Length: 465
Image 1 (cartoon, rainbow, N blue to C red):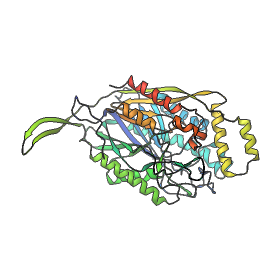
Image 2: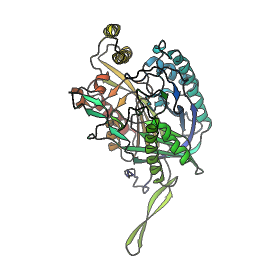
Image 3: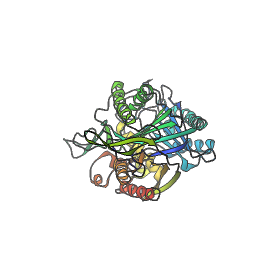
């Protein structure tokens, strides 16, 4: 099913678009086998023992003209940052060595849960000695792939269309045996199945890349899995790049706080690949429903036949060239959390691996945010032609994207979780009275998600045409 909301009455029916200089490039960022990769509290192993599919970094560079500064989006097959210091160690190096302004760079994680741990604080764990060298290599890889994308810039159009995919399901499941929620498939829960697809085409008509924005946790492979993997994103790329020869596919994780596949938490890589194919075929369907590059449907009058017919033609359509980049700070209230000293005392007396994992994660969050009652979190908002890109470092529920898309139906709204950092979840206000993981994991207080939605809408209202 294809969403037909993206219409511009003044030019018939056109896809939101951008025309300018665009370059796409990819590099391998697969870590070495043996690196510390314990991303699940329930895991009984510590290190990666093999590779399911390689991890990649895919960069796309946007520019209105050769004289203008570049705006760069990088999709990385990685999970999440555990420390703001490690994140800044990588991003600051990239900023310094590319000359890109902070407001024009977004490093977006696909959020695989089968990648390496990215915390140098885990250097003494099994395989932990490989983490820091990996981060050193990673930041150099990112610089190189950005420069390759910039070197490959040429005149292109980026056109968007919404589609649907049923892979993502609601994962806030009420425990039938206790007064709490479990993190797993809720067959009665609503799920945002919106898919956003961007097609990059050269002005000569050759397709050179695809951008996929979809909200679904890559948690197919879980605690029993011992392989490095991009999860379903790997097979998604295979479908798009090999079956359609569409150029590199760049996946952007949407606002997936409560969304994941129904069948997950397995070590069977065939399931991850099946999930990727499901999403990939939905992307191909959406691409197939788009107008020809640079075309819009235009009403061409009535034709009298057995029935009076409305004749529509695909006619040339100009694309906007606006490119505006903003980095803003949004203030969030903080929940009450134990002090670092209190957490350390609990760690000294705890022998349970799962509890230790939870406490270590909470300690890193407390260290990053301090003892304040509120904090400011950066948000990146880009206008690229008829599309808005919104990136932030947390894990928002899908309300973030659905509310903004409802407010701006004639624009392509690309919302990204886990961009340029990571702290915690942004669940809706009504869940704060429940015993549910995203609420007790997050440092942010009730109302933070709703405040972020309102702030983004207000800023977009000043940009929307």
